[in-house]
Image (cartoon, rainbow, N blue to C red; front, side, top):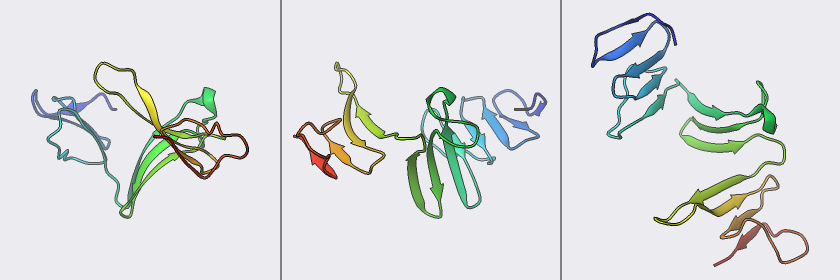
Length: 131
């Protein structure tokens, strides 16, 4: 983010690059409009596609690959984990309880619902449901 901005307090801080930070705490990248009724928002706009990428170099991510991404392209939404042998975990938390894993998709393409692994012996099934 550049250090010089125009605008006044309670308005959008307009920077010379394509980034904006509203006084409400919302952030826009590649857009001058953040359309949301949510308390806080990060809006990423691209002409044909946009992506939010998270990387950690200590866990297989580098500047050019690895990491996890949430991207949108031509009407499709993609959730990807590009780290070697990585899985995607879906976790939720009920009030007063700990966060627990509800579903996992492994790098091999296996899907576990209600379990984090297959404990039945032998090769993992493509779809394993507990509950």
